Length: 419
Image (cartoon, rainbow, N blue to C red):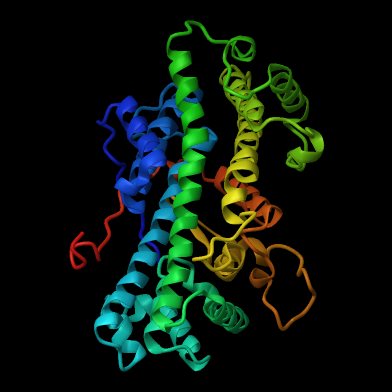
């Protein structure tokens, strides 16, 4: 289950204040909760979505809708919201653990009922929890781990192969978790997911959101902006002008290729990721001047791929697959592997699921006893990258859907926990 987005977030907070608050959170987020970080980031992305969207569609106004192909910053609020929903799942899981420390549950239903996870809307959570109990996990541990999937695509568990594999993976994570007491081990898994979601969101927004803000601020004072002026006058720390021009020229020559270019490590070996960002902003300017809607959309898509590549390849990957595992965590790679089949994002009124992507592709292992979604891992760059490109292509068919922006998330357990 996942909430349905409705009206846009009010955009009254000054842009500089919005970004400053998020950047402050990124360097001192011990003073804020992960969900507060998430709400600030989502709001910051919405600001940029409308500003960049306004370049590509002059008729677009804040809170409005555009039929022009969405730029990367239009996808970003929805992806950030998905991370926030994962943080809510972690909060629910922590509430199960907190209640159990006071009084252990006598059944799975009791453990889930304490945080309101009962009824048909939460059937998949109960189903996974039951399987974890049958695997030998205590009621409260099973309930807390199943709670992590509250906002995920529970329908994926209707495939019994996915259900059994997901159960086995969570049980293995529990067995590997540091700690002696069952609730301590479960909490290490919750901590791992919460940190992974929060750190990746902060890293991506600080760098790519911050670069977008720098670009729009530069543009506001630059007068008449042309693609050539962007390449020669706008810069980011670390960007190499010759690399940005190379990527821009390549995009102009290959924007209509099928499939659209996406293997940028091979195409641009050694390129600094900020060079790709400058090239992407230049492509958005080129798209603004394009003679036809088809040319405009092709250039926007190339810019989106450039930003998304560096977002995932350089900012997210070190968070999802760190070189050294923290001693108080389980493996982030294995945790993401466990939840990959259930991943889902609401892009406004359009829903993407990883299961849809996996089932659309040839069966990787050819084994009918394993479900295709369980054969992928979000922590592996290429598994994640190809899934994201699949989402882009689906969203391009429904461009207006993405302009239904998400609202701030509220933690329903905060009041009960003294938050």
